[in-house]
Length: 310
Image 1 (cartoon, rainbow, N blue to C red):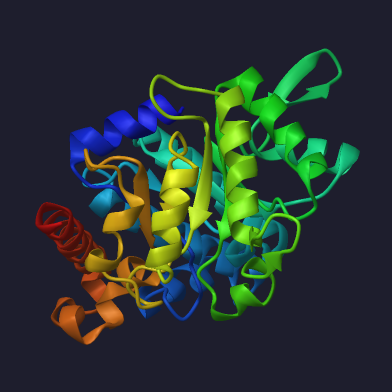
Image 2: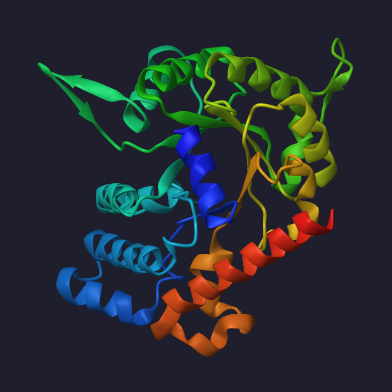
């Protein structure tokens, strides 16, 4: 699957992944009204609203981008109807030819980790049949329980030709409370030690040029990204934190290799709720999809310009 992701990035010229992280405050009123008219102000109504919102967004941007990243918590808050909307979104995006990164941040041990890996990337045995559950192309994985939590995902990646992005240095302000701690026997911060682990796992599951095992490194820490790019030369880096969290194109150059590959940058609310921003307010809520498309085009130009200037 990493080969497909790289090829789509080359084809679109957009190392961009759009985070499909719907919150009801982002869903335009006219979509909510239609959903509530059919299902009431219920969890089912919310699930229908976010599904219709996602579908319209994807219809407006799928030809510009290589990938999407639905964040499962935004769907789980609506219970089973929300998870149904998540699954419908995953399936629809794949129908549109997009690579789907399930932002599920799973991290556990033993049979629990195996079950998470099967649920999101593999197949589960049901009687004599093997069935796919959520069936994303990639999943995000939290490694801070150690290799016990990651190895089941490596196994499924090898079996299914799918991938993972391992949390190495996250974009949130308090990440340094643990991730920046210097490990005494290593003489380096914890995130660098984790990066070395990722580089080792990456060697086990290689695509043509890059590994199926990537890393998550926040855009808000460009200097750390520069160090981690060297530590993990064969891993694609998923970079959250662009836009709403403060990251800009100029902050991202160190995450990329010299050929402009090696990283994919995430923007969520900056695109899916673009119509609520002053810059794109002229589109109005009725044309939220067109606003999202304009935001993707601006993001692509920003990143391309930064890479060309370095």
